Length: 148
Image (cartoon, rainbow, N blue to C red; front, side, top):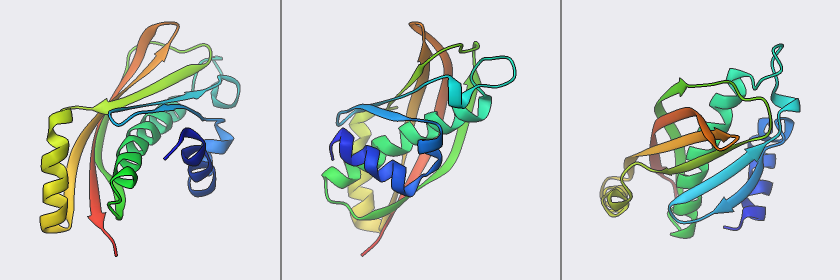
């Protein structure tokens, strides 16, 4: 899946990403980066709204697993099972969300479990960055359920 493919998918299937003006910057097998501007995501203090932070980090983490599942042609429904978010500092401009696997070596176990049981779970981490600083941290557990 290319960045353009994911961009079209998000726009169509998660319309909030369009309202937030989220852009897909890059996709790799073990990392995915999204970006968004301040203006459609600002709060009354002219910093990024906490809900926008939670959304872009969740979308980045979900998209990383989604694109990897797609690349390996594993048909599934992917859902977030649980997540935690830590806000560290305010964000006053365009920001990026970088998602990556908590333990990349676990992907093989994840796919084996998926094939054997028709479902599997995986932990994904993400950081929100602004002005070369980490401003928020996300940890989420995602579950892939096999579809036919």
